[in-house]
Amino acid sequence: MAGNSSKTINVTLQVWRQKNASDPGRFETYEMKNISTDMSFLEMFDVLNEKLISEGKEPVAFDHDCREGICGMCSMYINGRPHGPKQGITTCQLHMRSFNDGDTIVVEPWRSKAFPVIKDLVVNRSAFDRIIAAGGFISVNTGNAQDANCIPIPKDDADKAFAAAACIGCGACVAACKNGSAMLFVSAKVSQLALLPQGRPEARKRVWNMVQQMDAEGFGNCTNTGACEAECPKSISLENIARMNREYICSALTRED
Image (cartoon, rainbow, N blue to C red; front, side, top):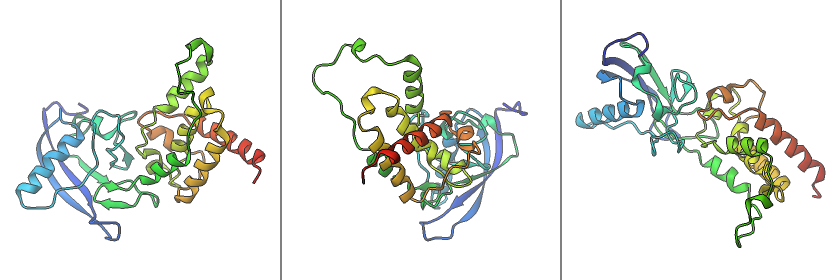
């Protein structure tokens, strides 16, 4: 644990509370005493909510599901960074040993026009679902499986496709971007199929539709500051944005309508 040898710490939480999208919202302060440094950040929030419920108060609404760094639900903006002070992890993988005794921790929801607040720290990320849906389908033979050697894929392409597919759609890239851009997310979803032969038949239609849907949802544009890659819990590369741009230009040049 950084700078602290004790097994428990006391911290002050400043948590964003907001009833719904139309409510102006405000910060509320909570004193958390004797918090085990072995707790995850979400477990600490469980303790906070148990305390609030016992006091007859409204618990803090926050997203969570797998608590294993897989689902991307735990979208908290902690002390000015998506998912908190550590790189390459989600909020559920962040532990209280990353903080010091007496720290003040500010917790907010993702801030983006395209992610309206539902309640407290929960935002509506259905825009991502609509972008995925706009990508359509891939043409795959659903009959007997072909021998693997019948579909030769260069290892470099396969590795890049797998790396892009690691995106969990948490929205940290949007939260980190000064423009609220979703291009890292969209480019990862475009790349994971564009790099593989199974995704090539619909590649140009897919990238066009997904980018159009991204713009329609109100996400900003990319200005290559790199904050998205730096804060991504799965370290998705900016290289994917360059690939998506190339795919999009090819699609625009060959469209018939």
